[in-house]
Image (cartoon, rainbow, N blue to C red; front, top):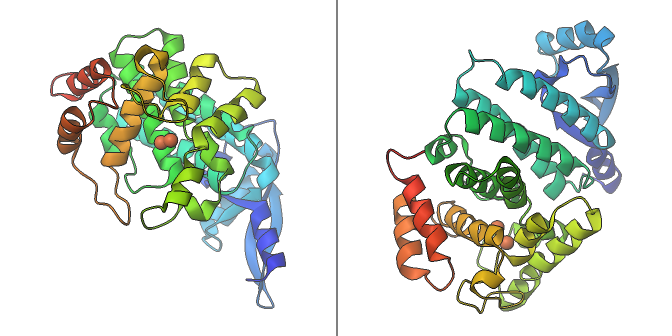
Amino acid sequence: MDTLQNEIEDQFRPINTDFLQAEGDEVFDIYYKSSVFGSQEFVKFASSHPSHQNKVRQLIDSGEYTEFFILQDDLIKYYHQATEQLRTLISDPAIPLLDKTQKLYDVSKDIMKNFFEFSASEKVLHSSEDVMGLMDQCLSEGQARFSTLSQIMNKNYCIYTHSLNVGLYCLVYGINDKMSATDIRSLGLGGMLHDIGKAKMDASLLKKNSSLTKEEMKIIETHPSLGQEIMESMQCYTTSIVRMAGQHHENYKGRGYPNALKGNEISLFARICKVMDVYDNLTTHRPYKKAVTPFEALILMKNQMTDELDPNILGKFIRYMGPGSH
Ligand SMILES: [Fe+2]
Ligand SMILES: [Fe+2]
């Protein structure tokens, strides 16, 4: 594909047509991709305006085109519409909890993917915040269990699913720990954004299919400070959330990075995030590393990671993961 074609492709993002039925007042154009004289073109055929609904539905039903696109700049409007539909969906008692959480997970995954892989504006993260709020509502009402999460999560490593998984583990930990509603939301959101600094790194480094060299490790290790900087510059996150990005690679007994903090010098939320980060990394499959089972991961964390993890948090996490608990 030539550069010009690449540039055009980069301006468009695929969308999920399930979310086109809302009566949103934020209108955006919808495109399909067509092949003209051997090259791909994006053709505008309708907008999301309610008066175009029939046209959109007919084209989807015709099966002539299976993928639809919007301009990258309209992502925020689209996610806003999607979130409103999800809000209606989760308030429907007839829909099983698992289906609701799966839908929320998929939309959130899509948002994070656009942020991490297609450099969507940081504003798109606010949509993720909304979806995380709905996830909290859904899981709190439905008696949150870690086992529910294991049924919906994608456990093949990529940066955006990892971010989301850590956010959800944090959220469910907070619910089980009976934290305040505000703290549960902050913990979930901070978990989801803990690796935000990696968004500024070379994608090839993040996608590397083998272990990293020393030099590459050095670059990766700047992500907590970078993440903290990004969040501070956005000026909309509380200190507890910002610290999760900045301190989640500190070790409980010291010698972590970037500041070799110890024990309670590391914020509580960052210590929780660390446990969830390690757990997701161990239980996730990578091309050069097999995933271990949840049980093996907990044993390994308890026996071999005492320098790194807060024993109190790990103890609670193991309890919450156990049978019979929420
Ligand atoms: Fe990290
Ligand atoms: Fe991480």
